[in-house]
Length: 541
Image (cartoon, rainbow, N blue to C red; front, side, top):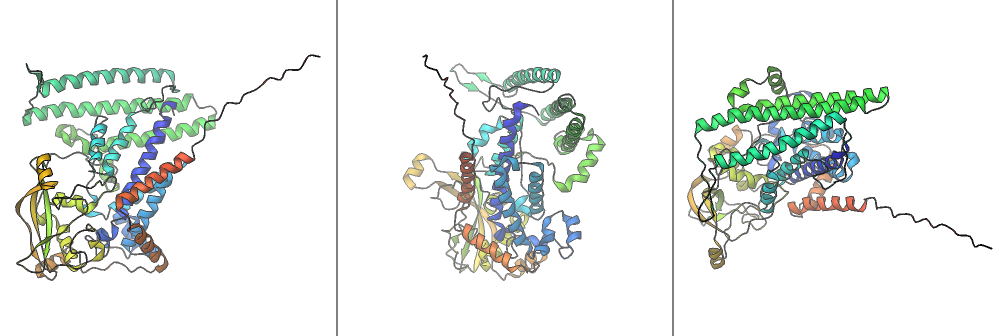
């Protein structure tokens, strides 16, 4: 490995451990309310063959199938896996010697196990790989939105850097001389060609012009035909650039293993390992072309059949996906929100439920949530973009709130009504939220203003026959998880949760991160002080 990526590699792996720690820790804090036996979407309903662990595992590829082996039900097993993975991630973040392929294989397998039963709350992921996005992601994080997903975006961009980008100026590339020269020349050429092309096409496509008063005018209008024509060139070109970079990297690694390692056995071992990783990287690149090339249908149809077959056979492992941002940005005309309301009489008064992180009360400021991911709050915003028929989990949430399930009620804001006594009726309305202006906020003391758009959820009661029948049909109620027989372990998990639940979720995650930083700081190797040698002089006699 070239010396010029040693620090970057260390930073990348530690950041990945930190993100895994946030992901597992955030999910652990919400498991009972989301996936418990009486949660919103009980996890055990996704494992119909739970009584036959081996068959269940081959069907669903999740370690939760073996929950009976440790004497736990599915939700408790999710808690155990989340806690264990959070601890392993913390260790990997603090001690770089733990950042091995084995550790990341365990973390990936554990997250895959949870994802397989996560349903709606774990099915939204995205990723971008543009270095320019780092500034945007940092600015979004400052608003408290999007949580550890933004951190993941930034971390993935570290793969585009080397130690020079991190401020290590005196580094030397020890790779094979000719390959190093080719890489440096190509890198310099591609970089400046990219800058020139970016500047040129930005001016052309956005019609940038300097007005007489010194302002910059811009107008961007593109037809479907022009967009398709652009994608027909951009997608193959981007694939070619990625393939070229991969070939150069693989050639450099194999050449270095072949010519720089001494000793036949060492040379054979290093070369074989490098070859295995190179094949794995090529396969990953190949299968990622299948979802990526859907941006341009002709390019997608030209993907090599071998890669397409690999993608089909590995799709259950979620090795790659069609990541991307929204096709249509929402919220420009206001932020749509679903507001749940409860009452003990049809005539009212209707009192709104409050969730800790989503807009609700008009005078409440948005909370700082990073790096926590509140799954219900986040998903309720998506529910506002459709109807309740498209979001059966919301119907289940309403029923759980009507029945006063403690683990679901715990997902509400501590200041919310209906914490101690559930209402007889529940409904939901759709509102469009806007920020108040400075003057409006100063006058009214409110952060938000809103307009009611329409009814969202009809009025339900806990024993409403169509509601109960529907929830039984989809398996949300009326099913039983396997019993938990390991009482000491179950009590231990209950005690851990009782302690952690006394703190705010973002505070828990920040405490883990700061503790890790403190440990890393205290175990730093101090800079050795120079040893001063004093020459002894003999007195002349």
